[in-house]
Image 1 (cartoon, helix red, strand yellow):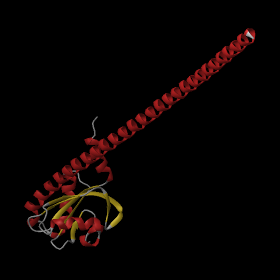
Image 2 (cartoon, helix red, strand yellow; image 1 turned 30 degrees about the horizontal axis):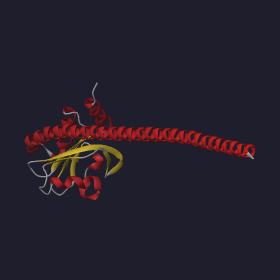
Image 3 (tube, one colour; image 1 turned 60 degrees about the horizontal axis):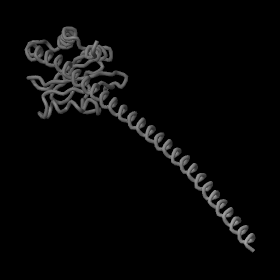
Length: 212
């Protein structure tokens, strides 16, 4: 009987050892899987953060580049406006002084001379009714500035709200095949003078504004 009890105790001890070993193996297996899951989660999180930071950096760079380009574009437009208005004021000064003594048939030739003197592509005189009366571009003579969206912008020089106006480079209302950048200033005798750059002169103006 003692031997039987001894055998039972040994069996019970062996069963308990096997149970503890099984639990230990389960615990070790769980720990290994937990470590793998945590490592995978860490890698995924790291990759996500890298992708997110890269994307944010790229978006910030693109946003900064867009802002810089817009600043450059605006600076070029502002400076080209100032340059062209400067030419318009030179023509205005000469016309205010000489136009009253100039014969009607000589006005177009006078405008040609002023364009050459001040490096302009075109010059036109617009009367107080908005009609082009003289121009270095004969096809524009007789055109009503109210007849087109582009030309209508210059009517602010006739209603007293502005004494100068500069416009972006683009097609003209009277002839969409002609591209110009225009500026205009009022004349002493009424109406205004409008001067312009063609594409070549406008490009030269832009080139002169860019750093070497």
